[in-house]
Length: 205
Image (cartoon, rainbow, N blue to C red; front, side, top):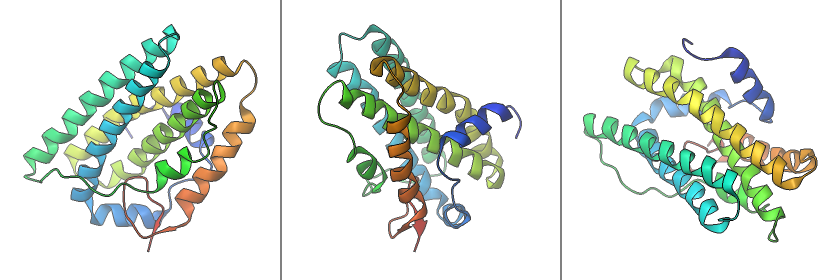
């Protein structure tokens, strides 16, 4: 794909435990309108996560800087998705969220600094999976959506790295064991059967 750094994409895929199954891609192409609406919702969620981290950790200047920037970018993405939704005369409404974030967040430890470290790792997986799915979908979409999703790849890839960089800093040691823990959770969420189709859902049934 044009304007996509192949090395960055390969690094991101290596971070994830598995590729998105073809069954999900096939279902996504049949439900592009619903996927756009769910995408807008997820951009709001991403901005909310960044802002929540800022409010919970006002003593961490580097986190404040990166999350402030991330929240602004996610809200711009939300506005961009909403513009496409309006152009296509779709109706934006709330959908039941997928199980994905709930499964990932269930493994977050409760005490600080473990909690912020795990929260950042979960954020990295969410951003990385979003990026990987944009790359999977883009070649099959119309010109407008293909261009838009490719434009998101660069920022989403940077977001996942920002999350991991902060998690490593606050841990002060290797976080490989926690990354591996969440890799297993993420793998199960992506590769197991899922009755609710969403942007981050598993294999459709």
